[in-house]
Amino acid sequence: MRAASLSPISLSSLPRPLMRSMVVPSIESIRANSQASPINTAWLGDKSKRRAKRGLQEKSRQRAWTVYAGGEGDRSSLDKVKERLRGGRLGILVTWMVFALYALGFAPGGSPESAANDQQILQALFTNPFDLSVNPVFVFIFNSLGVIPMVYASLLLPGATDQKPLRAGPFVGASFALGFFALGPYLATREERADPKQLTELSGPAGFLEKKIFSGLVLGVAIGLSVFLAQSLINSDISALLSGYLDLFKSQRFVHVSSLDFMVLSVLIYGPILEDMKRRGVGDETKALLYSALPVLGPSIYLLTRPGLSATSEKDTVEINTSEKDTLEKSRK
Image 1 (cartoon, rainbow, N blue to C red):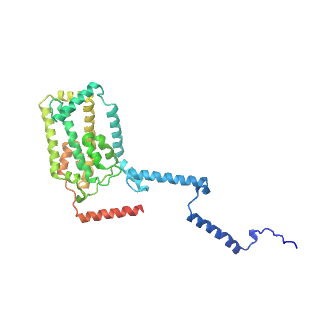
Image 2 (image 1 turned 30 degrees about the vertical axis):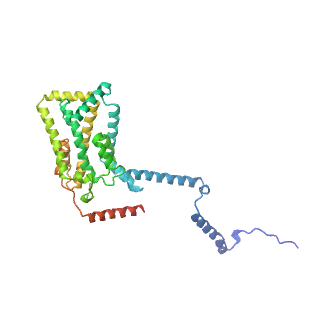
Image 3 (image 1 turned 90 degrees about the vertical axis):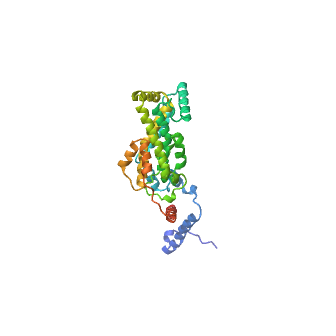
């Protein structure tokens, strides 16, 4: 007895309901398996691999923006970076780079004799800050570089909480010895804080710098330096005094770089003064320009005459901080 021959069955000859029962479950099972198990990049093929690689690169770029902007890895991070580079921030960064390069490699006074003279001037001023053997104009500049960082600290620290990517403390502190070399990177990358700052949030150095006693001491030193310079100009030949200073400026690297540092810090202080005025509700561009137009003395006068920051209770401050923290956690999710 011969076995019956079997002919191949065509799917088109089957009823449609039967076809659906055979095809649809297989598609659903593939989807379920793909969701339950890790993606096999070998099975995805070259196109999917490239797509996955582009996704990783995009995440890396977002992390890089986050490190700079101090925000979440989304479109707002790029906006924060653009905001900080606007309004002269990019100019500050370029100025700092050019200034550092010039001071280290191109400033006059690179000879051993000039270096020995620089050492002699520095030693004389450390021994006696008002040494009459040093040109009085440079004596004023040298001592002013100890006052200007105190003014910058008083202007910047009230808005220094949670600054990213750079913290204020190390750079503001180092500016007492290094001036714009230390302060430049922080000024270029910091976020402007013109919103009112709660007085209860100011503690430690920031709280001390807010006191009028400190502002009065700063102004007293600034007045003393100004009087010293005025008396020196009155009691001596002005042209000879200025000529002697220019000779030092052209030949001595220490005098040259210190003088440029003094000028740059005096020009850039306009921005922090205006920001601090807005923070206290008295923002006025004209007044800020007038305060910064008179080096050392003008900013010191502002410190003493500026209004105090608005005080809130400790409970209100905690509630504000908690609200901001909750908002940040929601945005991360």
